[in-house]
Amino acid sequence: MSDTHSLDALVQALRRLPGVGVRSAQRMAFHMLQHDRDGAQLLARSLQEAVTHVHHCALCHTFTEGEVCATCLDPRRDATKLAVVETPADQAALERTGAFKGRYFVLMGKLSPLDGVGPHDIGVHKLIDRASDGVVQEVILATNFTAEGEATAHVIGQALKSRGLVVTRLARGVPAGSELEYVDLGTIAHALVDRR
Amino acid sequence: MSDTHSLDALVQALRRLPGVGVRSAQRMAFHMLQHDRDGAQLLARSLQEAVTHVHHCALCHTFTEGEVCATCLDPRRDATKLAVVETPADQAALERTGAFKGRYFVLMGKLSPLDGVGPHDIGVHKLIDRASDGVVQEVILATNFTAEGEATAHVIGQALKSRGLVVTRLARGVPAGSELEYVDLGTIAHALVDRR
Ligand SMILES: [Zn+2]
Ligand SMILES: [Zn+2]
Image (cartoon, rainbow over all chains, first blue to last red; front, side):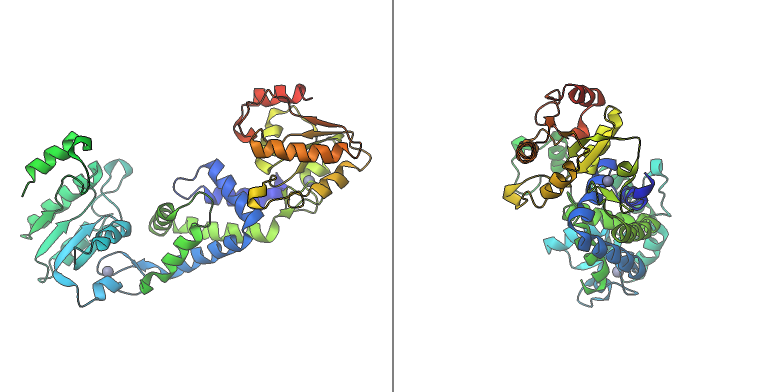
């Protein structure tokens, strides 16, 4: 309908968000226009602010508003250890453990040949430069334990090892707090292999 | 982190969308900033356009960019029949059946005492004015067949009948507990024919 052009355009724009189909997009547009126009304007401003100010850290590739991110700038972090993660969310998960005090390299993705995502797209050459700075002594591969995350860790690990770098991988094992009876067999098998 | 203020603000703004929790909001923000900055800017513009141009039809309350919506302006529609629906999506579902050629009144909501939504909030007084124009001969209650939709139909029906108007309800061909938006066309068409 021509008299709802703006509404139709909004629904189409919302559909570009991941996981949002046409029904969800319609529900979101309806909700904002009927109940939360302030929220709609806030979201519009936030999108423009983020697109304008957020870019990638020159050292670790995560999102930052500076040239280099706060984690990379923090002198208290151990510069000899470099953890490689897929996304800022994975980095945040590691940070919440409090168990890692080193630096990061954030791939901002993972190898996915079917989607056309190759080593260049996740910055493998930049990771190699970063890890070859003469200060880094260990690269810890902390990609996800999915098929694509494992493949990514494998490819990156090979590239780094071929340049003489020490490469480790997060241990596979039984999740803390779980009962063996309810853990899948593959996980238990890996935990046996990786026992310490 | 102060160096990701814009990103944090974007995640907070996305959480105001219905059905979007913190994880979804982070995934959306990450996706847009990493893979679809054009989409982010398009969404920002679409939100502002919609907030600026979309308001309510003076006659039926649905969203429109004009003073009166295209459906209300269409001279081929039967002005003697007025269908009352909860949302534009429900109206669209009725339209897709092709079985109704009358006019609409869109409540843009439903009675929900627990959420503080009373008759005034869904424009019942405006509906009564609209239905009392001397042209409307039948008001067809096409609210959803949920508990709240039934209660809304009951309250509206009583108010309209007490003013001498002829009020019908979609037949129970529509499965109880379902929302019109998700019901197949044939079922809605039968329910229209069998309205009581
Ligand atoms: Zn950094
Ligand atoms: Zn209208």
